[in-house]
Length: 275
Image (tube, rainbow, N blue to C red; front, side, top):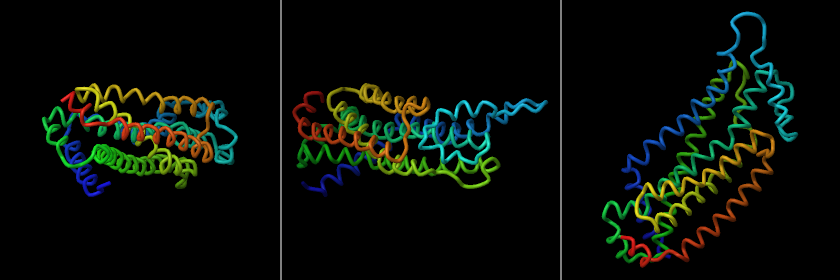
């Protein structure tokens, strides 16, 4: 394996994907919604819509919602008032799987732009005649997809933590976020999700003719993340530290199969036939 060739291919793809404004404009809007607007809405909405007269508690129904929290998280809510329970429940529990949309989306964009982008930019023929092997071409595009996806996801996570702690300071009176379960989610599961999006996108983009077609097909993977969101919000699944590690292990197993298939099935002949 010529890692210098792999690195060169990855750097070339990173530069070209960065120039694709059609792809990255939507990708810049979604993180803004998830890491800024969503936590602000969760934290501020109960007070904004509280009655202006009388004494009803805007968080009166919080106990009903927090009953969905599994026993593994009860200790995090112990000793908190209703307003504090709502902040922890909404921004620290329900929102956790939603941030996984970011590595999936970022890696899918870069992966979908890989071979289809080369074809649309009329640079595919030059790429296919480089001395790099098929495996080196594939791995170069893997790196170009996963690395920026992870960096952008972790940057978004930092912004989310700042917003949650700042917006909730008057209620919590301390820096409480992130909780223990968020660390394996970001360090273990997010890379697995990014690799999943990349592997699927690269395989699809080597078989279709347009970037939008590849991106739309890859977008079906969002069902996996949405299933986690629904399961977490309804109490069916709790992304505790242990469960998060197991979910990540399952995703990494799927990733290993997809990457292996990608390396085995990718060929210049198949890609050139679509050029």
